[in-house]
Length: 79
Image 1 (cartoon, one colour):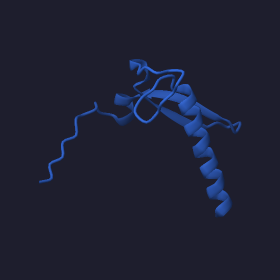
Image 2 (cartoon, rainbow, N blue to C red):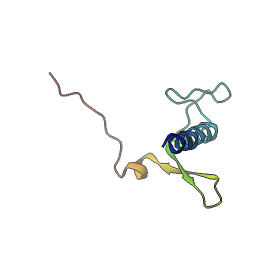
Image 3 (cartoon, helix red, strand yellow):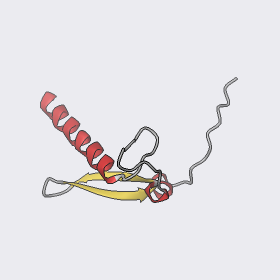
Image 4 (cartoon, rainbow, N blue to C red):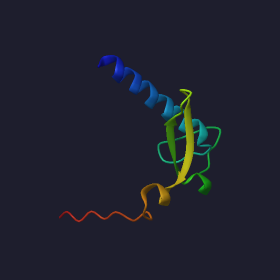
């Protein structure tokens, strides 16, 4: 069980790293000194998938397509 979790954590870390390297902008907590501006073209989610050959494949999905709805403004209704 420990080994399976370690492999899973390693794949998750690889996906995070690949996504961060592909995002050539600064947005929110993701800051890059080499890409200081926010770019509209990167209003996407990166999707990682393990390929048959064992490598990690990376694709982009627009935020609207990824969640199936257009982003909405959240309002705190608690009083």
